[in-house]
Length: 449
Length: 118
Image 1 (cartoon, rainbow over the protein chains, first blue to last red):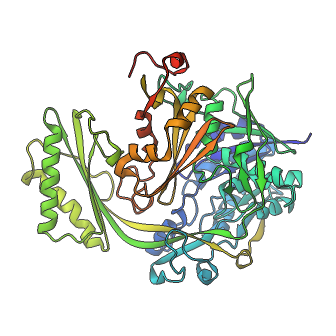
Image 2 (image 1 turned 180 degrees about the horizontal axis):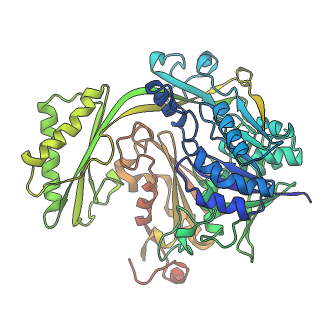
Image 3 (image 1 turned 90 degrees about the horizontal axis):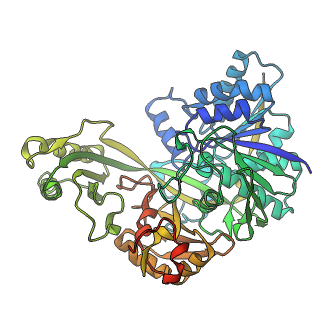
């Protein structure tokens, strides 16, 4: 039976680059797929572009990633699918072409997919899913709206001979499903195979999260050499089954437990996980641990794709001001609590206008909030972290200014952190809606090297 | 005996908008049955107190011995507008590791990394 080998190249923009290099050099891959986008990625890129017209519109680590993997991929004949195009897939494709030329490659094709940005077609969207609001009501605050494209445009680009396919917003599993559609010729009626392929994409798109990353819990779930995690590699057969492993000679491990965790990761309904190409049903999946340290995945089923495409909408929603300072030793929590009271009063004195203010004690309740047990032990060290969401920059700036005041006008033994990042940041709110498929027209362009 | 959930299951958090998705995956089938009985959506939400402001829906997957909890209103309005330091709620799942499960004495050996009554 025909088999293709697909490797993950990244799980998000900030992911490690070295494991991708190793897989490119030693993985004997047919395809390497890069996922680099979060929900706010495109809108944040639009904010940067508004501030600086020369700001790049693609993954800022595009150069790092391509320099790491292109030599290995060229040597092994590995084709690349990547959503590093963000707001400018053409610019990213052109930059990749520059890298290919620099490496002396000839006869290569770099395709880019556009057509997913629907900012000018909000009237074709249904109501905002979270609120039921009118999708055309954002006015000046609207930054960007993008439909999640599916695997078909990627498969088409590959069919047109692309060695590298660069996209903007598309569904994460589609990056992996695209090569399967192209290689195996699955049609829209092959529901179970589409479901299986999208499931494999879902398992792969977070890279090390299925090979032992985001997984170690000492004594409960121990991972070999967790500092040396390899990225996953899937051998997919044309019936939609796959054997999932990782690059030989790396740390981590693909186990039933790691596969189960990633299978459910970010899934609303495991019986009906919607992607643009198919609705995946994980409840029929059968997992088998193999002797060679890999996991066989089969039996995933699929249901017909959703009628409409999901759209991610980003809009300006004001600012967040935040800062932090420290206490330690006996009585640290009491001093932190008094500091909180002082800040609350001072925010009233200076008339802070905020939609929400939150003051946490890091080391005590900042992570679990109200879910912190009433009998949680008192910490030896505690940081007071204060944050407020406001409509204007000036109001958000007041948060840090009042924390400045805690240095000499606050509580005894207050430790002040050095500012390690800006104290005020802009909020890009994310909403979603559904759009008619005929309002979205993906286009493929091919650059020759 | 009362045992912390961490000896019966492993967990992972995911996010979508203002909804936290918390997976609870049993280490073995007999332990899964205990979780299905005791970790109801109501018990789950009560354990998180005010940290989950909306509805909790539970999906059961017998094929992998897992429960998926869909927790609405758990991420401070959503990743980008949340004032929480862990705005993705990536560590939110670890709170349920402390949930107390009533485990029959005869199942002691099925528990993972369990030395003494919790």
